[in-house]
Length: 120
Image: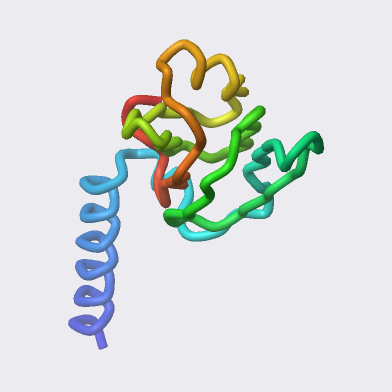
């Protein structure tokens, strides 16, 4: 019985140590899906439409981006020119300005990272 308790304690310590090595002391920022969505606004003709996502992944869009409210998400927006614009948690992005400034064109793709970007 004592050996079993020691074995369980050692395995627990090993698992916790591995987690600290991978994610740091605070643990992972998030993974997979969250309760708060990223909110992307884009033009459809003369109308502004809304697009929401609350799970990580890469999404094809091909739309004229207006504004991005990432909420707790980080990732990047890929424009038609191939330019990737990174975004961080809670950082609102004026996509019209980014597109004009970098002559980037339409939003082609959006990537929501399953973990917080190290750049953020």
